[in-house]
Length: 201
Ligand code: IMP
Ligand code: MG
Image (tube, rainbow, N blue to C red):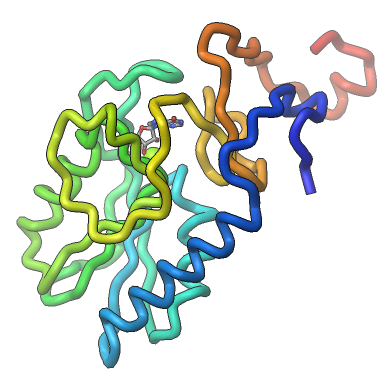
């Protein structure tokens, strides 16, 4: 396990540890299992931030569900919302007549999800609900009726368990806060050959 404070992740401010994540996701899974009893919900993961949550949540739901993914971009730079939402990858299959659950890592302003819900509504699903691991209620700009929420968090920039800062730190097993006044520099990716040659980071 990648622990807090390693050279790779030089911050210690753990907000949600793996045990709490696991326990809460088990509860969400049980709730969805009850709510969709006898049905076949379609989980739609919003790439890339939801991948770990999606994987764990799906395995906590005791139903014959299906999974699909879509990708949108909502961020102009690393930490500030641009309000512009662009579709990068659409779903593989139609959702008409399906009970859809959108699985999202975090609701910040709510703009991404507002856009997604509107887009998916036009395709005639039987129902659409949202399952978000995290929400920042202080930041909400758009009203989003999120039926399933893992944790409400303060207005801090967080990384880990799928959430990134400039594409890094998704692979932390916990969620931690980053100091926005002191963000680490993101070096370009190095190849193994460059590392062996002692190429500077
Ligand atoms: P919204 O459209 O403002 O709700 O932004 C939602 C998206 O912004 C999420 O799916 C994340 O990809 C990203 N985001 C918002 N807050 C954070 C954060 O604290 N850490 C990492 N990504 C974030
Ligand atoms: Mg995201």
